[in-house]
Length: 306
Image (cartoon, rainbow, N blue to C red; front, top):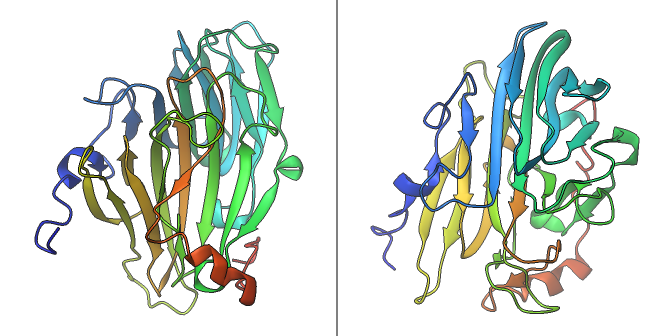
């Protein structure tokens, strides 16, 4: 593949903020997108007291406050309040899981808020129908080392969140680092080795503290395929942008030297097992061996002072 060809599939799989809006959600991705089947994502910025609603049907959901607090009002169930956080770089947040067939409304609680609602097609109605994972119970993993150091908040993975199909997490990458690295894939069902999962990346970026006023923080995302299943994405991303990964190797996710990078991952697939098993690109898996002799980036974990 030549440099001139790279990014040939951006128009199909990269959704800049506002390009996939619907029903008051500036980000609205679901199976109405051509070639997309198993996952969804809705994101909105709400004024204090403002609300958005979603039907459920066969979709289960996880509500993730990006900044501010939200009240979740499920049909025929008690409300829950998610305390949230100041911004996505300030640490984990409470999240709420809602089973399929549970429609709900989210309301900005006590001030403005931005909220993401992750979704996946679910085969069965889950019990209990509404579950909260408090921020204090979200496992925070420092993955990689050196310039591949990143922070992973595993609020929606098997073993932490009991769900039918959805897998979700947040990743924060300090300015200048790479994450989703080595490049990896999960697009085949191979027992004990790899699961078939499509994946949504939702991005936010934050300039470093000494950036001048008016700085334009960006990050970058790479997705590439095989000769049998080609895909070619090389995208510059800003806050609110989405990259869809239907298949193929994905990574690195690159934080520019002047901006920290956040992304929310949403995954699900057609297989009967809810599991997150990946396969590295063999050309790059050696990178993992280098981490044993490197320190984790001292800027991690991020916190309220970031």
